[in-house]
Amino acid sequence: MDRVKGKVAIVTGGAKGIGKSACLHLAAQGAQVAVTDVAEEEGRQVTEEIRAQDGEAEFWTLDVSDESGVMGTFAEVVDRFGHLDVLVNNAGISGANKPTDRLTQEEWEAVQRINTLGVFLCTKHAIPHMRAAGGGSIINLSSIYGIVSAPDVPSYHASKGAVRLMTKTDALLYAGDRIRVNSVHPGFIWTPMVRDFAKKSGEEPDAFREQVSQRHPIGHVGEPEDVAYGILYLASDEAKFVTGSELVIDGGYTAS
Image 1 (tube, helix red, strand yellow):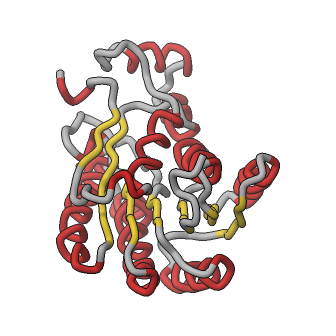
Image 2 (spheres, rainbow, N blue to C red):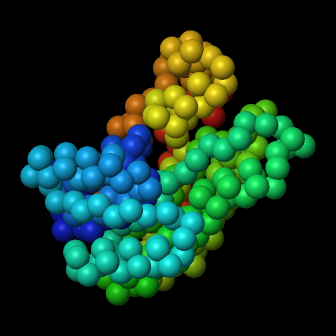
Image 3 (cartoon, rainbow, N blue to C red):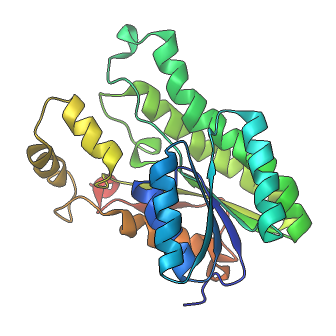
């Protein structure tokens, strides 16, 4: 129950899916959790769920593409909890599912603004607080599509490839500060974002789930907690010798 006891964690996109599960698991293992998201109602519900289980959490409304908002929120988290040890850069969107030549510049930039700029801004403003704390762990949510690709959502795949390399660069830059930076690469995880993607594709969610399950050698898609356990490991001191790594949680997708 104490794998991250005494640590303070900020989770972006913490209201739903993988982010929500990460918040719940970190809090259950002793962390004080800052749940951040643009979805205020759902984010506050996550906070209440943590408190109902005797955990400690607060909610902040946060758009990760707004630098002043990121800087101010991170300062408030440190004022509230005293320090910052863990950042989970989870906030992300899938964007328009069109071939590259049919994407508008606005559609492309909308995805990069959240998925890559957001990771940059949150990392930028976490580093000084982690230095002050004597170290920390930054966990960036990439994707299997940061490693391999597919003939769809090009802006999403590009953003996740960028996150993969941003992770390695920052791991090298901040190792001397005892700040570890790692990326997590989920396969298809049954989250609200994936369900929305299924609806946009024109398929019934159950049929879509069965179809993508067949792409994973293990025979099914994942659940948010499958990824949350990996995040918990990287946040903990169990991973003190792990930085610049790629934790692939994909049911064998990228091995086939």
